Length: 232
Image (cartoon, rainbow, N blue to C red; front, top):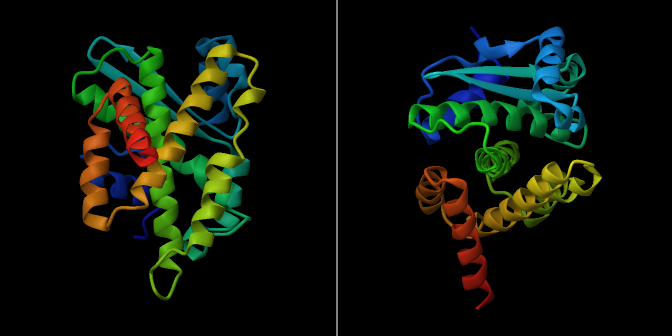
């Protein structure tokens, strides 16, 4: 049986970090359930993308996850499957797809490690910066797969960075907290991925595994220290 794009990316993340213990495809929800959960999430949720969302709820020692993808987003990825080629027609859809899957996976892994404050701002920022870093690395794999040399050119990296970082508009959020969250995490992720680009494959894998294990404060300190070292 052919694997879905979802299962292939989940498997990639699990090989990189750790087994989450569940098939995250079982956490997919429909539009009606997304609307219900969005209402419960509060006013700020109204500003989040309608293309895809991840919902997390804790009840005691249980974590409940819901992942929503709009019909439009799925149609785009089915019509322009990134496994057949990555270009301007499907890169934005793939970014959105990967980021939401990544949110769910890392939330589950952190919960397994004993993290319970899933409603905290640091938890949300941790998921966001991690998702942007991981999505960049996934995009690099897709690009490399379609290059005869399996090498990613500088022009490819600039193109990926444009779509993943430069095209973001955190300033558009009316909610102060959301605006600050996306401004900070996108800047941190952009700088950190520049550092990752300087490492060979083995060192990069070791680095991202260590990075993944850090809480948000430590992630931020790590990136700022790397930036200061580079400036010197």
